[in-house]
Length: 375
Ligand SMILES: [Ca+2]
Image (cartoon, rainbow, N blue to C red; front, side, top):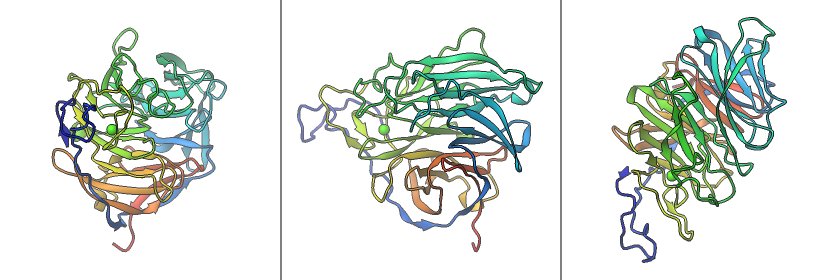
């Protein structure tokens, strides 16, 4: 559900609030639980994994990020540390080595990008070119360095889009209720999803695709529809899922934080929405039954779990619950269902080279999804 013209005045309860008349849509309520898939552990004993994926040209391995700073290649029972950044990474609840992205041409150029918190607590996005010779150091290039005021809301995902650009999610800088008002500040990189062409010569030129974010820990592309799905972690009221058309040449779309958390108006003095199409979440849930922090997932385009075809899968870090929903044609979502499977301390939902689901738990385990038995 999209609302153009974010500053529409109206007849809300507070006549002094210019956003009082902005009417959010009704979001889908969860239907009965579903049993679309089961999970099986495929690797255990990793150190606080934050991310799992497969590298182009390497279908035999899983590549796992450990929050303290290592990239580990897992092949059966064999583990190999490919990159060790532990001496320069600061680890905290939300700090550490947070996400990685393989260059689409990784099989030839050996380039990948990592996003981490450095020892000063600031954001670093670095490109590494893996050496052919074992033991040699990777070549590195700084793609983005951003001062980060607090320990929380560092964002996370870094990934290449279907257009070959690199995309990065940054949180609002931390603290409660975006005290520095960064998410609505177009001059700040905080509270944004940014993109840059990292194949162009010279330093990357970052620009915002989305603004008004609190902490986009995970987002992903549904490449065929040129859409992005975002899990924006909430404050007290709502964990939300957002769905946007990727239109990098348009003005950044505005997801509403801090004036809105989910569809709830957050009352603060003097805040306003910057211009840009206001996009409401397509789904949201509250902090009840141990739920605390959304882990955005992806639209399933694999084949192993036919019942999930075309559904968006996401979960909650604290409760470990997983949900799936069906994108409505064009915009919005329906058929929101809690899944039977759970992943405690869910940090990441990714896919292998065939689009099959991989999930990471900070407890140390990596899972794969399989079609539910008995269906
Ligand atoms: Ca929002």
